[in-house]
Length: 251
Image: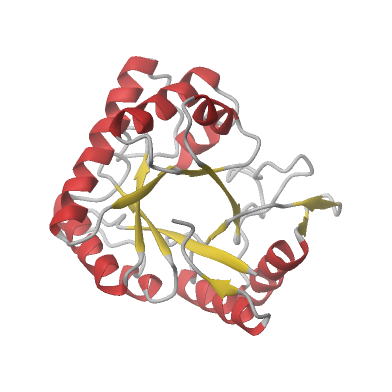
């Protein structure tokens, strides 16, 4: 069995430090690097790309709404044409920094509210897919299976890569529990590692109502900004390796 392990990194801004990017890059195979709209400044992103390149970790452009104050976790009713331009802009900026670091942008993953919005919001989903296609039709997109985003991405001929979340609770319909709800984000490394092992080896996980749902994913995400993120990622990595799962990037 094989699986990719990804994390959101490069989200520090100026004097504000978020997460331990260096430690996370030693654990994951793919890095969702912020592009400056929801988090990350140019110097941070440059350093992050260099660190990823040194470890041969794949670099993904994590695109989001223009929302530094809200960390990209607030829905914005942006016009599709503007959203397409915003996403192109973000991918292009990270492409330049990755290129200078001796690497490249290997995929695109929406962030936060944009990620959740395009599960159902068809116009915004198409706008993001159009942007990726315009930059490079060969770029895969990472996201939630059976979403409007994946449907639109396939219309553009883009490769879709489904992911599951190590540290997020799931609803019975397979969607993520809103961060506004209690226990939406899991904390215990042992519990998280056990859930991920079930996702990868058995293709299932327990939902918040106690039911068991089917999960099919090519990548597992551990959020880099979660408390104890390094401990969680370490526990997940060690458990998967112990179960004989090979950790490899999906690109």
